[in-house]
Image 1 (cartoon, rainbow, N blue to C red):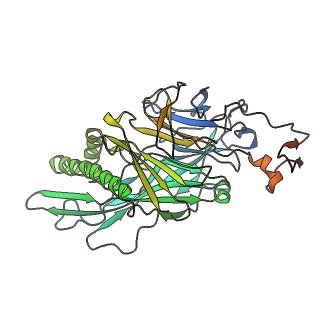
Image 2 (cartoon, rainbow, N blue to C red):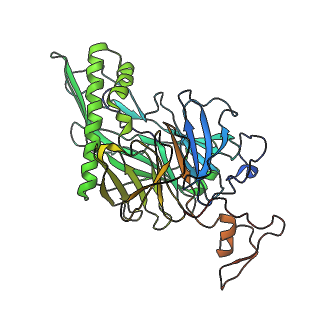
Image 3 (tube, one colour):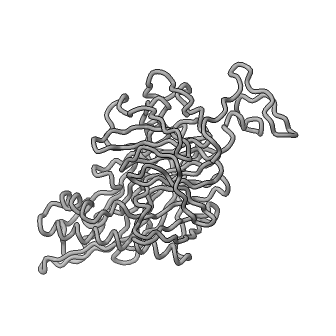
Length: 428
């Protein structure tokens, strides 16, 4: 996943489903997903490739290169597998740089005397539905959260969506991530100086209902946003402040470059590279199959430690735990996902394996199996033990006919379609 609070000026595969289709239907669902992870990578040429592998990183398989349904303007990221319809869903940034926001001078050029005002505008993300043959379809757009109606004097606000982060819960609701960030801008035209400084961001989690997602057909997809409380936990507050510090280093670079050269887009591009700001902050999050809480990992804002962030799904209270990471050995996170056994699996850029994080102790264990390394991408697993059709015996809708109520064994499946195939991935 990739995210930045734009500062300064800019700012299952049991088999293939036959011929590729660009409007996914029931023939292209992912039927094998127990402890299966799905990954989209994006290489330097802009090629999006869809993979499957087990959540313990074994048995990596290429599904398809996503190039058969027309050109993709930006990478598909923020991958998640819906337990409702068994399609993959991904997010695509709509801004030209893929960084969640853009600069917009409504009244004044920059720098203008005093406080130049509201310059930063968050952008929506496009939502894609993907079948297991690599067919994909844009189904709609998610808009950024509404900004606060009342702000402290002199402050403005921007709430970019993190297009590389999404996750599903057991009922098929999709969750996305945003950062609510206040900022102040000031300038002294006579002195030729200016600055745009950002406050500590606040985590926003948006929920798209299963019904809204499956019904989406090209328009705005309704999303309910809630704000996580990171202020009451000292470790959470500290990592949010550290991310603000990283962002302001980037902001100062952008402003200085713009004042020297007069090209805000070039300034943003140059400072994205020189400050490595895209490496910092939360790059992905996942919903636990045990407690339904949201988990994220900030692996880069500090040079010597990682921070595991847990947000209670009921209270939206965040708690954070630091774990030593001398020399930033874990590196840049690209994907975070749970196995069905509640093991939190992380994949880092350019590594050829994954690591699992014990959410109770914070111990990080390197997994034995190798995968193809990639610098950009995102992955997601379906962290729920019973597929929707099988769960119908417990009150859902599906094809099951009988279930043994004493032992919990499946007695008869749909006699026309046969018994469910065993999962191809081991329990992990």
